[in-house]
Image (cartoon, rainbow, N blue to C red; front, side, top):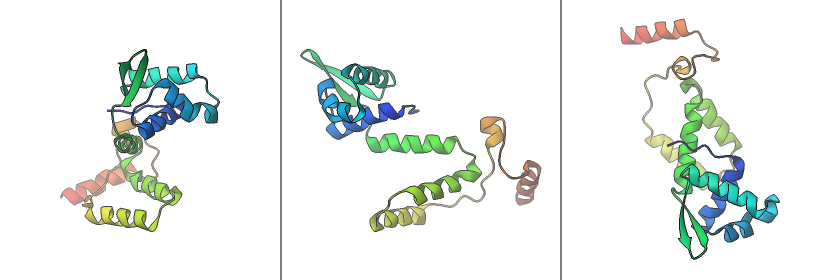
Length: 155
């Protein structure tokens, strides 16, 4: 599943994840003032999120109640995978290092990362996948040399 949501839609999703389920009025109380949005704008964003299957709706009297179809952790995991899918496999490490550099992390967070790294099985070899994914490569390496290295390892 792909998560293709805008920054504005993410604001709405964060409010709903916090509330667990919510009506338009409850969501508006959470986010309308800080974003200078009308109720009509929030309804439009909710409609888009329902269409994208990020939210489910149930009717309660005359109001709709919006419930997320996945947890915030699941959504963040999918967004992270989508980011890696958009980048050459050889540059995944750069993405991860930049994310770690930019993130505010506690000592506990760093310990969790260390444990995850300790459990990670290293790949024997990472090859450029730009030509497969994007039909073009902007990596700073020679594909012919990479192919020769692969052939040497195989031989």
